Image (cartoon, rainbow, N blue to C red; front, top):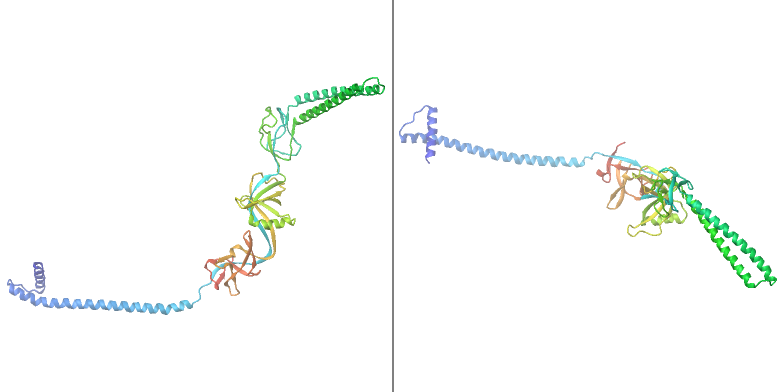
Amino acid sequence: MEWRHADVNARTAIFVRLSGRKVSADPAADSSFRAEHEAPAAGAAGESSERRRFARKAAIALLFVGFAWAVSRWSSGAQPAHDMAPPPIPVGVATATEGDFQVTLAALGTVKSLATVSVKTQISGRLTQIGFEEGQMVKEGDFLAEIDPRPYRHALRQAQGQLMRDRALLENARLDRERYQRLVKQSSISRQQLDTQESLVRQYEGVVEIDEGNVANAVLNLDYCRITAPVSGRVGLRQVDLGNYVQAGGEGIVILTKLQPITVVFPLAEDHLPEVLKQVEVGSKLAVAVYDRSGRKLIAEGTLASVDSQVDPATGTVKLKAQLDNRDSSLFPNQFVNVRLLVDTLREVTIIPSEGVQYGPNGAFAFVLSEEDRAIARPIELGPAEKGTTAVLSGLEPGERLVIAGSDRLRDGAKVKVIEK
């Protein structure tokens, strides 16, 4: 309690200085003096505390009043906000058109040659001449290479000489047989001699037949010395250089690939097979368009040539082959291409941009614009889609406008504002 006493003394001294009174050294006098002046100070402190309590209560009351005013203000202003019409939603629109719609099936295909030939020699010998340039286009029968023909010319002459010798022996044997026949009639010789001579004639006939075969084989070998193109097409890189000794059935000299016409093999899902076979069975030539890897540039056009006889169980697809003229040689064997097979053509159907098709719990629909520019959600029945357009089988008529942009903010019956491109 000493610090309180010291504090009171200090405050008393300050008050005395301000008032100009002197403080007595008598404690009793000091006590009476403090009592005299502390009583008004205590009253002032109580009055200040009362004011603070009043101010606190007033502030709380003002807060309640302000809160109540804000609530009433909000409730009174919210109702008109609901009654106000929302601003129109900007959208892009397109008009449904009528026309013929091509039903196509897309697939990934590989270019295949109708004939790929490894040109090999059919005889053995030294390669003495090459008659083509690598990558050259050749026609069937054009000269490609030559094997040294000299050994085969000599073999031909030898076979021909043997044939001439045996023919002379056969002719002499036939003459002797005629003599023996006359002598047998005259009973000058025995029948056995005639039979022996006839047997000899038949032996020489067989020998001549063998000689003629040897001659023909020698002629054929000589023809094999000159190698020609078996088909028309493009020759590849040379695999054997000039001067090498090649053997029959050995390494090929060059690979020749037929490019015109050419085929494209592509798989098709088994689900689409019935509609394709339906057209094939009636004799329709289904059109095939071949595009580059990006699917944008048209490379060539042709027709469907054949359908494989079975479905691949591993992929659930069946292979189809299309044939194309390839006059400009734009297609190359083993090239990867995009294929579009034209299966059918729908006549006079409603066509819309694919961006206008929306999907909901009940299926496909479109936001159709009314005369008051309101978006009406209307169910539609979709047909096939191709190149950013979709055929509509029912639910939409040609000439009607539909939303193709900005539909993410739309609700059925919403007011819209058409934005022109």
